[in-house]
Length: 179
Image (tube, rainbow, N blue to C red; front, side, top):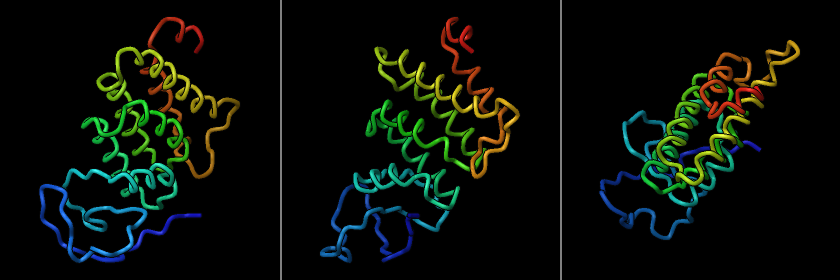
């Protein structure tokens, strides 16, 4: 069941804070709201709670890789702004990165994960998150063993991406020995 993004209503709003939008008062709240949909405007977009939940649940179902990239970027920004806890974002990455079809986007997500672990995970959780990410990288890499290098519909057909990610995710000597 692929989500359908459609423009229901366009409303121009200029604001620096949360304000009621008279044109939308009394309307049913949509499942997902994206500011400037269909426009390549530069903006720092924070998802409201309902849109964030919808994006988390359906991220892998958005057909447009540019829209997925914007969503991933928005969620990473929400981590940096302490709106979304870093471990929650990292769990989402582990759950959804395997279904991403755009290898350039996968590489971008991997870079974001490394920065998130280094800078936004609480110290008492860092080692656990490093281990979870390393295990994810090895899991992705294991799909290439036995000569299988092309798995339909995913970006897993670039083992170099996952070799680099696995190598960069090594956090101790035991991880190297197990690799």
